[in-house]
Image 1 (cartoon, rainbow, N blue to C red):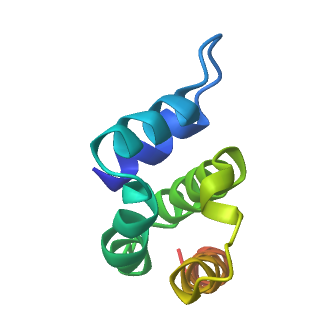
Image 2: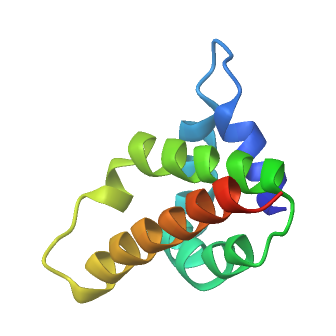
Length: 102
């Protein structure tokens, strides 16, 4: 699921797949994408072993975060800030591991 979402987020099509992902999650519950990213996707991302998968996930998570303003715009809420800090930490781990291991 994680790789699928990240590959979908990085595809370049006339329709913005990242906005579609965000709308699908937010249609179910506001800020659901952020909650799923924080509680599930980021913890799975750190456990990836293959360097290509780590790079795909790092790019996909960046694209999701940058294309979804609700994830990056914090309202002073500690949950929003902790999601942003968790994303940055996960990306650093993914990119560090991707360059040091094969």
